[in-house]
Image (cartoon, rainbow, N blue to C red; front, side, top):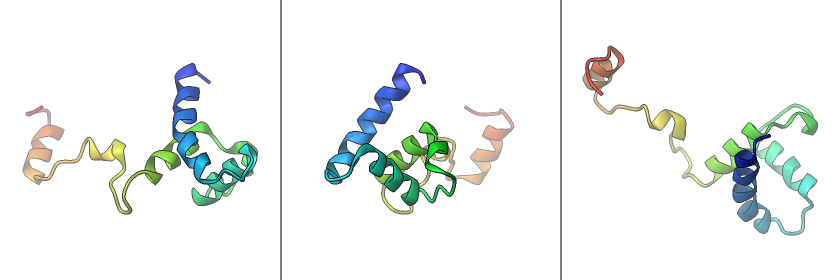
Amino acid sequence: MPCHRVNEILELLSPYWLKNKELSLLEVLALISKEAVFDKPLAALTDEVIIYHLKMEQEEKGAMIPGIAKDCENDFYQALLKARGFTD
């Protein structure tokens, strides 16, 4: 795993773990897995799931996914022009 991914996980995990101080690291990861409705074994939990879950936990309920929000257009006509490459 690249160093920046490790740093990102540690940065996101710190405040989450502080809320659950009594848990071990494995228990925290199991809790994240449960909250993310990850139905595979804990050994299959990927860093993407951890990062996504911890980022979305900081967002309001019903907030748009950040990766989708950057491409969202309020005006359908502008979105259509953008999709066809006529605007930036």
